[in-house]
Image (cartoon, rainbow, N blue to C red; front, side, top):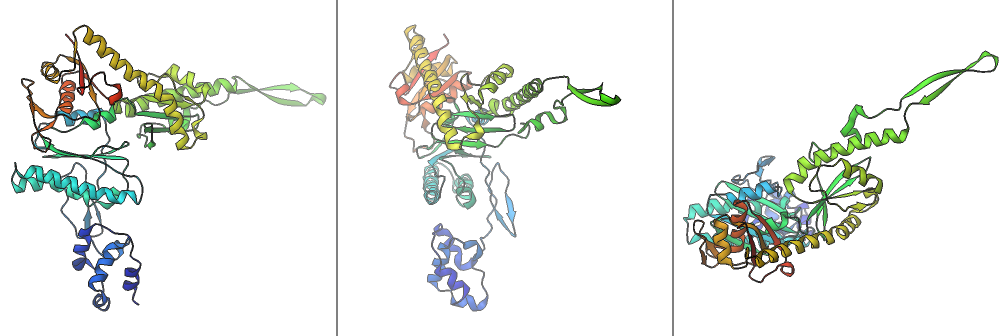
Amino acid sequence: MTAVRQAVQDAANALPDDLGKRLGEAVQLTGADREQVTAADHQAIAQHRSWRRLIRPRPHPPPNLSRTGTTEGSSMKSTHTPDTLTLANLAELASFQGRPCLSLYQPTHRRHPDNQQDPLLFRRLVKALETSLQGQHTADTVQTLIQPFEALAQDHGFWNHTLDGLAVLGAPALFRVFLLQKPVAELAVAADSFHTKPLRHGLQSTGRYQVLALSLHKVALYEGNRSVLDAVALAPGVPKTMTDALGSERTEPHSSVSSYGGVGGGHMAMHHGQGGKKDEINSDAERFFRAVDRAVLEHHSKPSGLPLMLAALPEHHHLFHAVSHNPYLMINGLMVDPQGLTQGDLCQRAWDVAAPQQVARQTAWGDAYTAAAAKGLGSENLAQIAHAAVAGRVATLLIEADRQVAGRIDASTGRIDPGELEHPRVDDVLDDLGALVEKMGGQVHVLPDAHMPCRTGAAASFRH
Protein backbone atom coordinates (compact mmCIF):
# COMPACT_ATOMS: atom_id res chain seq x y z
CA MET A 1 0.00 0.00 0.00
CA THR A 2 1.42 3.42 -0.97
CA ALA A 3 1.91 6.28 1.44
CA VAL A 4 -0.90 8.11 -0.32
CA ARG A 5 -3.37 5.29 0.19
CA GLN A 6 -2.30 4.98 3.83
CA ALA A 7 -2.96 8.67 4.34
CA VAL A 8 -6.31 8.30 2.61
CA GLN A 9 -7.23 5.41 4.86
CA ASP A 10 -6.41 7.49 7.95
CA ALA A 11 -8.73 10.33 6.85
CA ALA A 12 -11.23 11.37 9.51
CA ASN A 13 -12.09 15.02 9.87
CA ALA A 14 -14.18 16.77 7.24
CA LEU A 15 -13.17 20.10 5.76
CA PRO A 16 -15.38 22.48 3.74
CA ASP A 17 -16.78 21.00 0.54
CA ASP A 18 -15.05 23.51 -1.71
CA LEU A 19 -11.69 21.92 -0.87
CA GLY A 20 -12.95 18.62 -2.23
CA LYS A 21 -14.09 20.29 -5.43
CA ARG A 22 -10.63 21.76 -5.97
CA LEU A 23 -8.79 18.59 -5.07
CA GLY A 24 -8.61 17.15 -8.57
CA GLU A 25 -6.53 20.05 -9.88
CA ALA A 26 -4.61 20.66 -6.64
CA VAL A 27 -3.25 17.20 -5.72
CA GLN A 28 0.53 17.20 -6.05
CA LEU A 29 1.64 13.59 -6.62
CA THR A 30 4.15 11.72 -8.74
CA GLY A 31 2.92 9.77 -11.74
CA ALA A 32 2.75 6.32 -10.13
CA ASP A 33 0.84 7.52 -7.09
CA ARG A 34 -1.41 9.76 -9.19
CA GLU A 35 -2.73 6.74 -11.08
CA GLN A 36 -3.74 5.02 -7.85
CA VAL A 37 -5.87 7.89 -6.56
CA THR A 38 -9.49 7.07 -7.33
CA ALA A 39 -12.50 9.36 -7.07
CA ALA A 40 -13.21 7.92 -3.63
CA ASP A 41 -9.63 8.63 -2.65
CA HIS A 42 -10.07 12.25 -3.69
CA GLN A 43 -13.06 12.58 -1.41
CA ALA A 44 -11.22 10.97 1.50
CA ILE A 45 -8.17 13.17 1.04
CA ALA A 46 -10.43 16.22 1.09
CA GLN A 47 -11.62 15.04 4.50
CA HIS A 48 -8.15 14.43 5.84
CA ARG A 49 -7.10 16.70 8.68
CA SER A 50 -3.57 16.93 7.30
CA TRP A 51 -4.75 18.04 3.86
CA ARG A 52 -2.03 20.67 3.62
CA ARG A 53 0.53 17.88 3.21
CA LEU A 54 -1.39 16.43 0.27
CA ILE A 55 -2.79 19.39 -1.62
CA ARG A 56 -1.56 22.86 -2.39
CA PRO A 57 -4.25 25.54 -1.96
CA ARG A 58 -4.73 27.78 -4.95
CA PRO A 59 -3.85 31.39 -4.28
CA HIS A 60 -6.78 33.77 -4.26
CA PRO A 61 -6.76 37.55 -4.75
CA PRO A 62 -6.14 39.48 -1.54
CA PRO A 63 -9.39 40.91 -0.18
CA ASN A 64 -10.05 44.60 0.17
CA LEU A 65 -9.39 44.61 3.91
CA SER A 66 -8.17 47.01 6.53
CA ARG A 67 -5.60 44.38 7.45
CA THR A 68 -2.64 43.21 5.39
CA GLY A 69 -2.12 39.73 3.98
CA THR A 70 0.92 37.51 4.39
CA THR A 71 2.50 35.00 2.08
CA GLU A 72 3.36 31.38 2.74
CA GLY A 73 5.63 29.85 0.17
CA SER A 74 4.40 30.59 -3.32
CA SER A 75 0.74 31.01 -2.46
CA MET A 76 -1.07 33.88 -0.77
CA LYS A 77 -3.07 33.17 2.36
CA SER A 78 -5.33 35.86 3.78
CA THR A 79 -4.60 36.57 7.43
CA HIS A 80 -7.35 38.39 9.30
CA THR A 81 -6.21 40.02 12.53
CA PRO A 82 -9.30 40.91 14.59
CA ASP A 83 -9.83 44.59 15.39
CA THR A 84 -9.86 45.76 19.00
CA LEU A 85 -13.27 46.99 20.09
CA THR A 86 -12.85 50.53 21.40
CA LEU A 87 -14.97 53.65 21.79
CA ALA A 88 -13.06 55.20 18.90
CA ASN A 89 -13.82 52.54 16.33
CA LEU A 90 -17.43 52.30 17.50
CA ALA A 91 -17.70 56.03 16.79
CA GLU A 92 -16.07 55.42 13.39
CA LEU A 93 -18.72 52.86 12.50
CA ALA A 94 -21.58 55.02 13.78
CA SER A 95 -20.46 58.01 11.70
CA PHE A 96 -19.53 56.10 8.54
CA GLN A 97 -21.15 57.70 5.50
CA GLY A 98 -20.66 55.02 2.85
CA ARG A 99 -23.43 52.63 1.87
CA PRO A 100 -24.61 49.97 1.82
CA CYS A 101 -23.41 48.87 5.27
CA LEU A 102 -23.26 45.12 5.86
CA SER A 103 -23.53 43.85 9.45
CA LEU A 104 -23.10 40.18 10.35
CA TYR A 105 -23.28 38.73 13.85
CA GLN A 106 -23.13 35.12 14.99
CA PRO A 107 -22.28 32.98 18.01
CA THR A 108 -18.96 31.13 17.81
CA HIS A 109 -17.11 28.53 19.85
CA ARG A 110 -13.66 28.44 21.40
CA ARG A 111 -12.92 24.74 21.11
CA HIS A 112 -12.94 21.79 18.76
CA PRO A 113 -15.20 20.14 17.65
CA ASP A 114 -17.90 22.76 18.34
CA ASN A 115 -16.07 25.40 16.29
CA GLN A 116 -16.26 23.28 13.13
CA GLN A 117 -19.83 24.50 12.58
CA ASP A 118 -18.94 28.20 12.88
CA PRO A 119 -17.68 28.78 9.30
CA LEU A 120 -20.72 26.92 7.93
CA LEU A 121 -23.07 29.28 9.77
CA PHE A 122 -20.96 32.22 8.61
CA ARG A 123 -21.35 31.18 4.95
CA ARG A 124 -25.11 30.90 5.38
CA LEU A 125 -25.31 34.42 6.81
CA VAL A 126 -23.06 35.77 4.04
CA LYS A 127 -25.43 34.20 1.52
CA ALA A 128 -28.32 36.02 3.21
CA LEU A 129 -26.43 39.31 2.83
CA GLU A 130 -25.78 38.57 -0.84
CA THR A 131 -29.44 37.80 -1.46
CA SER A 132 -30.50 41.03 0.25
CA LEU A 133 -28.12 43.06 -1.94
CA GLN A 134 -28.97 41.47 -5.27
CA GLY A 135 -32.29 43.24 -5.71
CA GLN A 136 -30.76 46.69 -5.24
CA HIS A 137 -27.24 46.56 -6.73
CA THR A 138 -25.37 45.32 -9.79
CA ALA A 139 -23.65 41.94 -9.78
CA ASP A 140 -20.21 43.59 -9.76
CA THR A 141 -21.09 45.76 -6.78
CA VAL A 142 -22.46 42.80 -4.87
CA GLN A 143 -19.35 40.75 -5.60
CA THR A 144 -17.06 43.56 -4.43
CA LEU A 145 -18.96 43.90 -1.17
CA ILE A 146 -19.21 40.17 -0.48
CA GLN A 147 -15.65 39.20 -1.48
CA PRO A 148 -13.99 40.17 1.86
CA PHE A 149 -16.58 38.07 3.71
CA GLU A 150 -15.85 35.11 1.46
CA ALA A 151 -12.11 35.52 2.04
CA LEU A 152 -12.70 35.41 5.79
CA ALA A 153 -14.74 32.24 5.38
CA GLN A 154 -11.69 30.61 3.72
CA ASP A 155 -9.24 31.66 6.45
CA HIS A 156 -9.03 28.38 8.34
CA GLY A 157 -6.52 29.74 10.85
CA PHE A 158 -8.97 32.46 11.86
CA TRP A 159 -11.76 29.99 12.64
CA ASN A 160 -9.47 28.02 14.95
CA HIS A 161 -9.03 31.04 17.27
CA THR A 162 -12.51 32.49 17.79
CA LEU A 163 -14.15 33.37 21.11
CA ASP A 164 -17.87 33.32 21.98
CA GLY A 165 -19.27 35.70 19.37
CA LEU A 166 -18.31 37.32 16.08
CA ALA A 167 -19.12 40.67 14.48
CA VAL A 168 -18.11 41.38 10.88
CA LEU A 169 -18.96 44.73 9.30
CA GLY A 170 -18.26 45.66 5.72
CA ALA A 171 -18.92 48.54 3.33
CA PRO A 172 -17.15 50.21 0.42
CA ALA A 173 -13.51 50.72 1.56
CA LEU A 174 -14.17 49.36 5.05
CA PHE A 175 -14.01 45.90 6.65
CA ARG A 176 -13.91 45.23 10.40
CA VAL A 177 -13.79 41.97 12.34
CA PHE A 178 -14.43 41.80 16.10
CA LEU A 179 -14.19 38.78 18.39
CA LEU A 180 -16.70 39.00 21.24
CA GLN A 181 -16.58 37.44 24.69
CA LYS A 182 -20.32 36.89 24.74
CA PRO A 183 -22.56 34.94 22.34
CA VAL A 184 -24.71 37.10 20.08
CA ALA A 185 -27.85 36.30 18.12
CA GLU A 186 -27.51 35.46 14.42
CA LEU A 187 -28.01 38.54 12.28
CA ALA A 188 -27.23 39.48 8.70
CA VAL A 189 -28.48 42.87 7.56
CA ALA A 190 -27.59 45.26 4.75
CA ALA A 191 -28.76 48.81 5.45
CA ASP A 192 -27.86 52.49 5.19
CA SER A 193 -25.94 52.27 8.47
CA PHE A 194 -24.14 49.63 10.51
CA HIS A 195 -25.99 47.66 13.16
CA THR A 196 -23.82 48.43 16.21
CA LYS A 197 -26.06 47.74 19.21
CA PRO A 198 -24.32 44.44 20.10
CA LEU A 199 -20.94 46.22 19.94
CA ARG A 200 -22.23 49.10 22.05
CA HIS A 201 -23.61 46.58 24.54
CA GLY A 202 -20.21 44.92 24.64
CA LEU A 203 -18.35 48.18 25.16
CA GLN A 204 -20.46 49.73 27.89
CA SER A 205 -19.66 49.12 31.50
CA THR A 206 -22.55 46.84 32.42
CA GLY A 207 -21.37 43.26 32.61
CA ARG A 208 -17.89 43.86 31.18
CA TYR A 209 -14.76 45.07 32.90
CA GLN A 210 -10.99 44.74 33.11
CA VAL A 211 -8.98 43.29 35.99
CA LEU A 212 -5.52 44.61 36.81
CA ALA A 213 -3.63 41.79 38.53
CA LEU A 214 -0.84 43.60 40.37
CA SER A 215 2.03 42.58 42.63
CA LEU A 216 5.50 43.95 43.23
CA HIS A 217 6.83 41.37 40.80
CA LYS A 218 4.34 41.20 37.95
CA VAL A 219 1.60 43.10 36.11
CA ALA A 220 -1.14 41.37 34.13
CA LEU A 221 -4.41 42.59 32.62
CA TYR A 222 -7.60 40.63 31.97
CA GLU A 223 -10.89 41.48 30.32
CA GLY A 224 -14.17 39.68 30.66
CA ASN A 225 -17.61 39.36 32.14
CA ARG A 226 -19.58 37.02 34.35
CA SER A 227 -18.69 33.94 32.33
CA VAL A 228 -15.16 34.45 31.07
CA LEU A 229 -11.96 36.35 31.79
CA ASP A 230 -9.35 36.48 29.03
CA ALA A 231 -5.78 37.72 29.28
CA VAL A 232 -5.11 41.01 27.48
CA ALA A 233 -1.76 41.63 25.82
CA LEU A 234 -0.27 44.65 27.56
CA ALA A 235 0.51 47.58 25.29
CA PRO A 236 4.24 48.19 24.73
CA GLY A 237 4.14 51.23 27.01
CA VAL A 238 2.84 49.30 30.04
CA PRO A 239 5.55 47.99 32.41
CA LYS A 240 5.26 44.28 33.19
CA THR A 241 7.62 44.34 36.18
CA MET A 242 9.12 46.85 38.61
CA THR A 243 12.39 46.63 36.70
CA ASP A 244 10.57 47.59 33.49
CA ALA A 245 9.11 50.62 35.25
CA LEU A 246 12.09 51.85 37.31
CA GLY A 247 15.11 50.28 35.66
CA SER A 248 18.31 51.53 37.24
CA GLU A 249 16.37 54.02 39.35
CA ARG A 250 15.32 51.38 41.89
CA THR A 251 16.34 52.39 45.40
CA GLU A 252 19.57 50.79 46.60
CA PRO A 253 20.23 50.34 50.33
CA HIS A 254 22.53 53.10 51.62
CA SER A 255 25.08 52.31 54.31
CA SER A 256 28.14 53.80 55.99
CA VAL A 257 31.15 52.09 57.49
CA SER A 258 32.52 52.89 60.99
CA SER A 259 35.61 51.48 62.68
CA TYR A 260 35.59 50.40 66.30
CA GLY A 261 38.70 49.58 68.33
CA GLY A 262 39.05 46.05 69.57
CA VAL A 263 41.25 44.05 71.86
CA GLY A 264 44.91 44.22 70.92
CA GLY A 265 44.44 47.33 68.83
CA GLY A 266 42.45 45.49 66.16
CA HIS A 267 39.64 47.21 64.31
CA MET A 268 36.27 45.80 63.18
CA ALA A 269 34.25 47.42 60.42
CA MET A 270 30.52 47.83 61.18
CA HIS A 271 27.91 48.65 58.46
CA HIS A 272 25.04 50.92 59.39
CA GLY A 273 22.00 51.34 57.13
CA GLN A 274 20.80 54.90 56.59
CA GLY A 275 17.27 53.94 55.69
CA GLY A 276 14.93 51.12 56.66
CA LYS A 277 14.28 48.40 54.10
CA LYS A 278 10.52 48.94 54.45
CA ASP A 279 10.92 52.61 53.47
CA GLU A 280 12.92 51.61 50.39
CA ILE A 281 10.30 49.06 49.31
CA ASN A 282 7.46 51.54 49.82
CA SER A 283 9.28 54.21 47.79
CA ASP A 284 9.85 51.83 44.89
CA ALA A 285 6.31 50.46 45.13
CA GLU A 286 4.82 53.95 44.99
CA ARG A 287 6.80 54.90 41.90
CA PHE A 288 6.05 51.52 40.32
CA PHE A 289 2.31 51.86 40.95
CA ARG A 290 2.29 55.40 39.56
CA ALA A 291 3.96 54.19 36.35
CA VAL A 292 1.53 51.28 35.99
CA ASP A 293 -1.47 53.53 36.66
CA ARG A 294 -0.43 56.10 34.02
CA ALA A 295 0.29 53.47 31.38
CA VAL A 296 -2.88 51.40 31.93
CA LEU A 297 -5.02 54.53 31.84
CA GLU A 298 -3.46 55.76 28.60
CA HIS A 299 -3.22 52.48 26.69
CA HIS A 300 -6.17 50.44 27.99
CA SER A 301 -8.75 52.24 30.14
CA LYS A 302 -9.26 55.29 27.93
CA PRO A 303 -9.51 53.35 24.63
CA SER A 304 -11.90 50.73 26.05
CA GLY A 305 -13.90 52.88 28.47
CA LEU A 306 -14.26 49.82 30.73
CA PRO A 307 -14.27 49.80 34.54
CA LEU A 308 -10.98 48.60 36.03
CA MET A 309 -10.87 46.31 39.05
CA LEU A 310 -7.68 46.00 41.06
CA ALA A 311 -6.67 42.52 42.19
CA ALA A 312 -3.82 42.83 44.67
CA LEU A 313 -2.79 42.17 48.26
CA PRO A 314 -4.73 44.27 50.80
CA GLU A 315 -1.68 46.37 51.67
CA HIS A 316 -1.25 47.34 48.01
CA HIS A 317 -4.84 48.51 47.53
CA HIS A 318 -4.52 51.61 49.70
CA LEU A 319 -1.26 52.69 48.07
CA PHE A 320 -2.49 52.13 44.51
CA HIS A 321 -5.75 53.99 45.10
CA ALA A 322 -3.80 56.82 46.73
CA VAL A 323 -1.59 57.39 43.69
CA SER A 324 -4.07 56.48 40.94
CA HIS A 325 -5.58 59.08 38.60
CA ASN A 326 -7.62 56.52 36.65
CA PRO A 327 -11.32 57.55 36.69
CA TYR A 328 -12.27 54.04 35.56
CA LEU A 329 -10.81 52.40 38.70
CA MET A 330 -13.57 50.68 40.68
CA ILE A 331 -13.88 51.54 44.36
CA ASN A 332 -14.08 47.92 45.41
CA GLY A 333 -11.49 45.43 44.26
CA LEU A 334 -10.26 41.92 44.83
CA MET A 335 -7.99 41.79 47.89
CA VAL A 336 -5.90 38.73 47.18
CA ASP A 337 -2.56 37.87 45.64
CA PRO A 338 -3.63 37.32 41.99
CA GLN A 339 -0.58 35.15 41.33
CA GLY A 340 -2.03 32.52 43.66
CA LEU A 341 -5.27 32.12 41.69
CA THR A 342 -6.07 30.15 38.57
CA GLN A 343 -7.67 32.16 35.78
CA GLY A 344 -10.99 30.43 36.46
CA ASP A 345 -10.86 31.33 40.16
CA LEU A 346 -9.90 34.90 39.29
CA CYS A 347 -12.91 35.13 36.95
CA GLN A 348 -15.37 33.91 39.58
CA ARG A 349 -14.01 36.02 42.41
CA ALA A 350 -13.84 39.13 40.24
CA TRP A 351 -17.48 38.72 39.25
CA ASP A 352 -18.48 38.32 42.92
CA VAL A 353 -17.03 41.80 43.48
CA ALA A 354 -18.28 43.35 40.24
CA ALA A 355 -21.87 42.05 40.23
CA PRO A 356 -23.29 44.27 43.00
CA GLN A 357 -21.68 47.35 41.46
CA GLN A 358 -23.07 46.48 38.03
CA VAL A 359 -26.59 45.97 39.38
CA ALA A 360 -26.41 49.24 41.33
CA ARG A 361 -25.35 51.12 38.19
CA GLN A 362 -28.19 49.66 36.10
CA THR A 363 -30.71 50.45 38.84
CA ALA A 364 -29.45 54.02 39.06
CA TRP A 365 -29.94 54.53 35.31
CA GLY A 366 -33.52 53.28 35.53
CA ASP A 367 -34.26 55.45 38.58
CA ALA A 368 -32.83 58.52 36.83
CA TYR A 369 -35.18 57.97 33.88
CA THR A 370 -38.20 57.53 36.17
CA ALA A 371 -37.38 60.80 37.93
CA ALA A 372 -36.97 62.62 34.60
CA ALA A 373 -40.23 61.24 33.25
CA ALA A 374 -42.07 62.40 36.39
CA LYS A 375 -40.92 65.95 35.59
CA GLY A 376 -42.01 65.71 31.96
CA LEU A 377 -38.42 65.29 30.78
CA GLY A 378 -38.62 61.67 29.74
CA SER A 379 -40.41 59.46 27.22
CA GLU A 380 -40.66 55.84 26.12
CA ASN A 381 -42.50 56.73 22.91
CA LEU A 382 -40.20 55.88 19.99
CA ALA A 383 -41.55 58.62 17.73
CA GLN A 384 -41.03 61.29 20.40
CA ILE A 385 -37.55 59.97 21.16
CA ALA A 386 -36.59 60.03 17.47
CA HIS A 387 -37.67 63.66 17.04
CA ALA A 388 -35.82 64.64 20.21
CA ALA A 389 -32.68 62.72 19.13
CA VAL A 390 -32.50 64.54 15.79
CA ALA A 391 -32.85 67.86 17.64
CA GLY A 392 -30.09 66.95 20.09
CA ARG A 393 -32.41 67.02 23.11
CA VAL A 394 -31.72 63.48 24.42
CA ALA A 395 -29.31 63.48 27.37
CA THR A 396 -29.50 59.75 28.16
CA LEU A 397 -31.01 56.85 26.21
CA LEU A 398 -31.69 53.40 27.60
CA ILE A 399 -32.04 50.62 24.98
CA GLU A 400 -33.25 47.06 25.49
CA ALA A 401 -30.44 44.66 24.62
CA ASP A 402 -32.18 41.79 22.84
CA ARG A 403 -34.95 43.65 21.05
CA GLN A 404 -35.20 44.88 17.48
CA VAL A 405 -37.66 47.29 15.88
CA ALA A 406 -37.40 47.20 12.10
CA GLY A 407 -37.57 50.56 10.44
CA ARG A 408 -35.67 53.58 9.17
CA ILE A 409 -35.27 57.00 10.81
CA ASP A 410 -35.26 60.13 8.66
CA ALA A 411 -32.11 61.90 9.87
CA SER A 412 -33.50 65.37 9.12
CA THR A 413 -37.01 65.09 10.59
CA GLY A 414 -36.85 62.12 12.97
CA ARG A 415 -39.77 60.41 11.26
CA ILE A 416 -39.76 56.61 11.65
CA ASP A 417 -40.72 54.58 8.59
CA PRO A 418 -41.57 50.94 9.45
CA GLY A 419 -40.00 48.20 7.37
CA GLU A 420 -38.55 44.72 7.24
CA LEU A 421 -34.97 43.94 8.26
CA GLU A 422 -34.52 41.91 5.06
CA HIS A 423 -34.79 45.11 3.02
CA PRO A 424 -31.33 46.56 2.26
CA ARG A 425 -32.28 50.08 3.42
CA VAL A 426 -33.86 49.04 6.72
CA ASP A 427 -32.09 48.63 10.05
CA ASP A 428 -33.02 48.39 13.72
CA VAL A 429 -34.69 51.63 14.91
CA LEU A 430 -33.31 51.13 18.44
CA ASP A 431 -29.79 50.79 17.09
CA ASP A 432 -30.16 53.89 14.92
CA LEU A 433 -31.52 55.86 17.88
CA GLY A 434 -28.41 54.98 19.84
CA ALA A 435 -26.15 56.16 17.03
CA LEU A 436 -28.09 59.43 16.72
CA VAL A 437 -27.95 60.18 20.44
CA GLU A 438 -24.22 59.48 20.65
CA LYS A 439 -23.60 61.64 17.60
CA MET A 440 -25.37 64.54 19.34
CA GLY A 441 -23.37 64.13 22.55
CA GLY A 442 -25.82 62.06 24.59
CA GLN A 443 -25.13 58.90 26.59
CA VAL A 444 -26.45 55.49 25.58
CA HIS A 445 -26.80 52.46 27.84
CA VAL A 446 -27.92 49.01 26.66
CA LEU A 447 -29.75 47.10 29.39
CA PRO A 448 -31.23 43.63 29.71
CA ASP A 449 -35.00 43.43 29.65
CA ALA A 450 -35.25 42.92 33.42
CA HIS A 451 -33.63 46.30 34.10
CA MET A 452 -35.51 48.37 31.50
CA PRO A 453 -37.98 50.85 33.03
CA CYS A 454 -40.42 50.43 30.10
CA ARG A 455 -41.68 47.92 27.52
CA THR A 456 -41.20 49.80 24.25
CA GLY A 457 -37.49 49.00 23.92
CA ALA A 458 -36.21 52.55 24.62
CA ALA A 459 -36.44 55.19 27.33
CA ALA A 460 -35.01 58.70 26.92
CA SER A 461 -34.25 61.47 29.38
CA PHE A 462 -34.37 64.93 27.77
CA ARG A 463 -32.08 67.91 28.34
CA HIS A 464 -34.96 70.36 28.19
